[in-house]
Image (cartoon, rainbow, N blue to C red):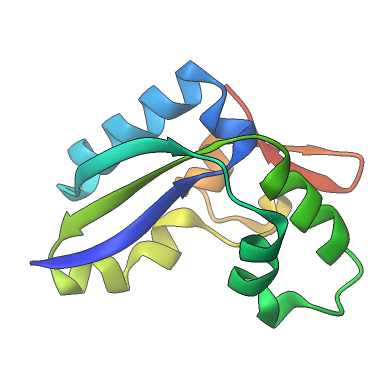
Length: 120
């Protein structure tokens, strides 16, 4: 078994339908098991550190504000190592408009005013 960090970003964390749909998808489609799910309020400094590879991009200040404005739901994901390696394909491309059919972003995403957000 392998472990990974799972973060439901603020726009999906505060929508019960999105949380329920994503949790169900993870367990049903990939047999991923969520462990230790809880609410967590990240600081701006933690978000800046976590996303430091995006520093300098035009959307970085928005991302830090967005991710630190409200609590997020975090958990530990338990699954096989091979399943974790495929998670990026399962999530879909960062841009919802370019996400492949069937990916989480294609299924639960919404594109609005140049910003991609989850919906449900």
